[in-house]
Amino acid sequence: MATHTTRMLIIGSGPAGLSAAIYGARAGMEPIVVQGLQPGGQLTITPDVENYPGFRDVIQGPWLMQEMQAQAEHVGTRMLWDTITSVDLQSGPPFRAIGDGGDIYEGETLVIATGAQAKWLGVPGEHELGGKGVSACATCDGFFYRGKKVVVIGGGNTAVEEALYLTNHSQDVTLIHRRDSLRAEKILQDRLFAHPNIGVVWHKQVDRFVHDEATGLLRAVALIDTITGEHSEIAAEGAFVAIGHAPATELFKGQLELDAGGYILVEPGTPKTAIPGVFACGDVMDQVYRQAVTAAGTGCMAALDAERFVQEREFLNIRKAVAAG
Ligand code: NDP
Image (tube, rainbow, N blue to C red):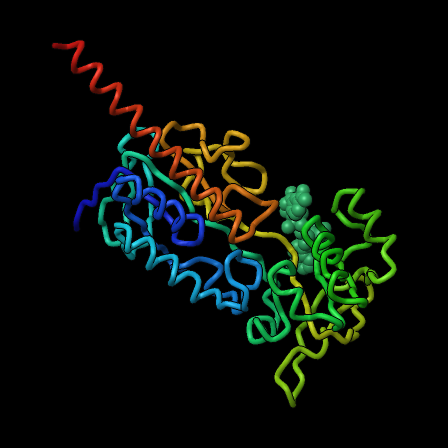
């Protein structure tokens, strides 16, 4: 068991954590990134990325994350592979985290970049058809279904926004919802119902995703009526599951304030949590935008604020030392 100390401890290695690391390392904070269970975050399961600025051609999510990690290491970040099982935010700084092998991590500042996971339906075909017709992000993958028939599953803001977004690419969008009313905001509902290219199928639960025998790609979505139990099928080449996200904030419950959805609450417009020296960035504090580029942006902000926090503490310590003679 070892103790690792740093001026900037980063938990999570998606675009938010690695951007914080790049900025922190370049500012001399000698950051440590604890990578977690899914090193690289959600982008490592995103095959094609076309909306990250700077790349004209389609790039691969896993490749982008490898490059970010290589850049973070090149400027002096230490990447450690461990799963944090507990954190103590009350007695810091330094803030202390414990890994599942017992290693101790101490950071003068803590950057939380643990991300969020899309919720999945857990029905047959969903996992197998990932990247072959089934997706949880229309903004990321909608473009690949240009001119094709697509469906969106869910009835919240995300589902409605995704359905509206998909009309940029498809003239045939169907929203599938398990009840007869949406929980999305009224203004979004109004836009949805007014759109000539969007249809809504009510009272339907997805039974399974059906692939085409010849191509191996999504062909249809098999449905069950939630009232009559009747089975039916809707043809679709793209299906977007939009039933919510779950932020990875279990570790911080009781120590940081979370909103009703479990996201970390920060001072508006900043990555600052209620505990000075503890910052949150990326999807763990953002349930609205959730893009790689916005996560990277808030990671940068967290690093800049962490650096300022350390500088202010050092300045205060020097003043105290001078005053004490
Ligand atoms: P929500 O939790 O609001 O909605 C999830 C939807 O998925 C619900 O309609 C729910 O159905 C449905 N659902 C859940 N589980 C299943 C399942 N197993 N099978 C079928 N349907 C299922 O999640 P969102 O991601 O839409 O939104 C999360 C939060 O983010 C909300 O607070 C939202 O307001 C916010 N948000 C805000 C945006 C904005 O301001 N622009 C954009 C996107 C999100 P049911 O209704 O029956 O429970």
